Amino acid sequence: MKFFDEARIEVIAGDGGNGIASFRREKFVPRGGPDGGDGGRGGSVFAVADRNLNTLIDFRYTRTHRAQRGENGGNKDCYGKGGEDIVLRMPVGTVITDQESGELIADLDEDGKRALIARGGKGGLGNIHFKSSVNRAPRKRTMGEEGERRSLRLELKVLADVGLLGMPNAGKSTFIRSVSAAKPKVADYPFTTLAPNLGVVRTDEGRSFVIADIPGLIEGAAEGAGLGHQFLRHLARTQVLLHLVDLAPFDPDADPARDALAIVEELRKYDDELYAKPRWLALNKLDLIAPEERAQRVADFLAAYGPVDRHFEISALTGDGCRPLIFALQDFIDTERARLEAERAERRAAFEAAQAALLAERLRPMEPPLDDDGDDDDGACHDDEDDCDDTLPRD
Image (cartoon, rainbow, N blue to C red; front, side, top):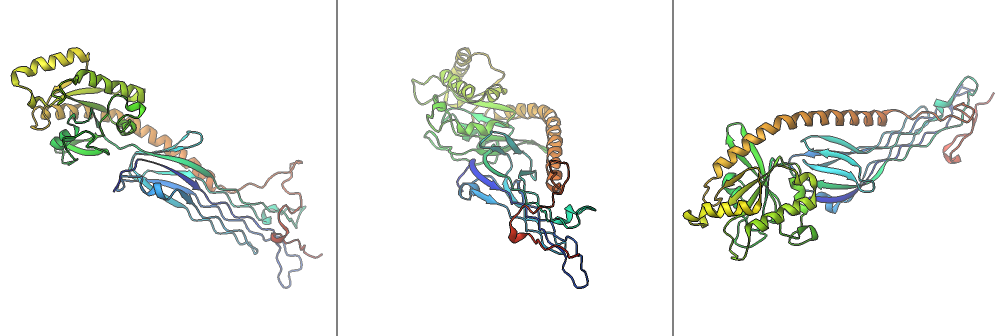
């Protein structure tokens, strides 16, 4: 299946049904009162995170999603039926934003997380709500509210603890094959990886982390060179970036330090928050360097590159140096997880409170409108004559 990590859709919630103005007509009931029922509420549109999905391909071809309209009210105090809600299932990690305002609607970062993305309209009121001691035959009713209509942008950001960075053919796919059960394509030409790959690294029973491999970056990716830098969005949720550097490039004119700094500059151009993440270096392909030259090659690179948080000397092909690296990553991630879980719990509580308020507002019935004099009944029928029964009970 082709990997799609971005889509634009339109969601249309259902309109509320109209209230009706009618009066009882029964034998031996000469003064039948109002009996017009309310319209049903319109259906809403919900989004739910589903861990069984890993792409937004369903939303690339079905772009409009419309909920059902509420039924109109009926006579004999009959209320209209509410419209059916629709639920859109999306991959875990999907970020939903309003395309026009840029407002964040929901971040589906946990399996089963549910968000209201378009609220259905409330049903209109029938004339039974407008009767009073001074107006026993109200002809007034209200129309149903329109449902929300939104143009949304869906953006999938995969959930991973460690993100791999590097030039094409730096050995990222070979590394993820070496330390996990993932089997991304490996070949001797650039841009072998065309879509993000995830691998689970298990360091002990009950201890593991997820590592993400994205297509390689080159200088000028921000301007569209190579595959561009659009895949960097998948590193936004990671806790640490692992920058793989090829210390034994095939091109004799290549400068590993200059290429590595170019990758760092592309990070800065893309997003300051991503640029500020902890970034470790993994100096790869040491198996292609003579043992007596390795120390000098590493020292020259570090001198040209500048200060770095931590660096490791590895060979992804043979596995040399990979074990200390993954255990160091596991220790760092374990430390970060406690802090992140506390922040996630706080965000979850705020999100659930906001969703509860939206649902409570959705279920609250429409209030009768007030006239200029403060009265909620002006005795007039404001809607089409076909839907309004003007026959008054006879005295």
